[in-house]
Amino acid sequence: YSAKAHRNEYSSYEPEMNRKAHDRLRLESDLRRAIDEEQFALAYQPLVNLTSNKVVGVEALVRWHHPKRGLLPPGEFIPLTEENGLILQLGEWVLGAACRQNKAWQDAGLPPMMMSVNLSMRQFRQHQLADRIKAILQQSGMPPQYLELEITESMTSDVEFAADTLSSLKELGVQISIDDFGTGYSSLSSLKRFPIDKLKIDRCFVNDLTRDASDAAIVSTITTMAKNLKLKVTAEGVENDEQIQFLRERDCEEAQGYYYTQPIPANLFENWFRHRSQTA
Ligand code: C2E
Ligand code: MG
Ligand code: MG
Ligand code: MG
Image 1 (cartoon, protein in one colour):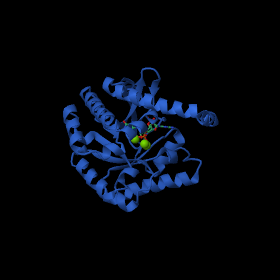
Image 2 (image 1 turned 45 degrees about the vertical axis):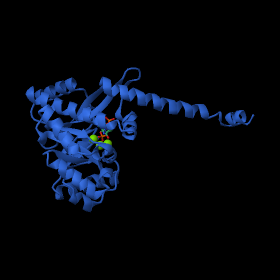
Image 3 (image 1 turned 60 degrees about the vertical axis):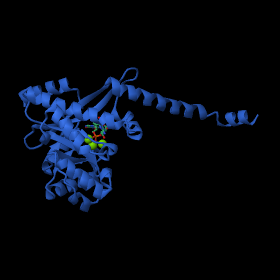
């Protein structure tokens, strides 16, 4: 029978493909339930000013407490939510939770801090994004100037659309930063057209900074350019003293990375912050 022959011919990888397709369907149905049941949590990672050595903000990074598979990092589910549109609901949850946390910290007497939230392409293109964010800010009671929205260079490829969307966001009084800067292909002239506040240098350039001359040159160039364009600049993925020293010498404004702490849950962040304030 040809069907059987056909099956044998592909038998080495057909089960593998079936398993992958099956895993994906399972993950997708798990995700729908996870949104309803709020199985997500935010981890927070500080951004530190390199001149004052003070914590100036935190970035909210989503995690999924999967009932069977345990703690999943965003790389394992965000791409799927972007494909199937669930990112819109998840993204609203992230924004709301981050804003409520920022307000709670301010009410608890922590110094004012920025709260950075990552936006995905699909959210960026969402109809009336600014109105939705405005409603979230109002519901949480968080002052808009503490919210920083992180977008990536790829979201700015449609220059007209990006310029319009970004200015509607800026009207809310929030800050805008470009995440993973240097890995995309945004033209320098388009940068000038966008009402952005900050560049976040991707950690792939920071990683080998002190050993690789071209990485060092890239980081210096971005830092200088940011200064000339009157933008703030954050180095991501800082892990050691040598990198901190290099960044200080180049007048890089802020750093973020395991050097300070990994992203941690809100209560651990509070402990980390209070301990650091006492010992600094
Ligand atoms: P990102 O926005 O560039 O976030 C920084 C990532 O670098 C985080 O990974 C963080 O844990 C990691 N990182 C921080 N410091 C260091 C370091 O010193 N060394 C190394 N090796 N890594 C460091 P995470 O939490 O797994 O997030 C990965 C990406 O997932 C984020 O990259 C962001 O693009 C996306 N993401 C996370 N949360 C959200 C969210 O709520 N919404 C959307 N749309 N995307 C999100
Ligand atoms: Mg980010
Ligand atoms: Mg990044
Ligand atoms: Mg990223």
